[in-house]
Length: 242
Image (cartoon, rainbow, N blue to C red; front, side, top):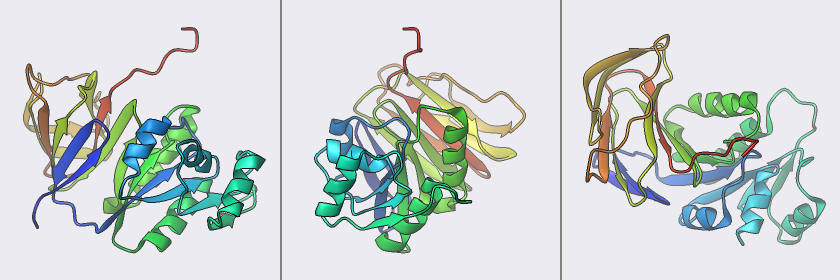
């Protein structure tokens, strides 16, 4: 399988990606800035989970569809979507699955089997919502690329995967977050504190707050076995009292 390059605002990713299309799904958490969303939307299939639909409208975009109980979506935005004949899939507020779970199913059904998902609108707000977003994405397996907006990005890497990241915006911090009981064969280069053949377990404190090596704009991560999150912070979210 040949390496391919895909882009998000501020960075380019090169890896052995096998998907044919990409979904950009916006959930109801911290909404991405309109200018970020406009760039990230290019060439991607767009889907909104409830309030996430409004982020597309604010960016001057129409999603290809939306899913949810739509209790957190402004009525005016709902009417705009209906007038534009955007397919909307309504579900009751009292249900076993979250809006995100249902939206992922609908988006994947419409975009095609060989699609991969970027989730925006997952950051911010309640910790249980963020954890739920991460777990929901994790269970998608190779169909889940990561969580992203203009402030934070989390990429998922699995067994035998390697990814090279080239930055046009320098991240404030680079961290690794083990997401399986054990991650082995960690090779991290292009950063101030590289790793070679490292092994990390769930119970250990994760290797956080790394940075790019001096004069570097590129880094590479490879793992032998496990599931790991590669996290970048471009803008630290402000504390409530700031």
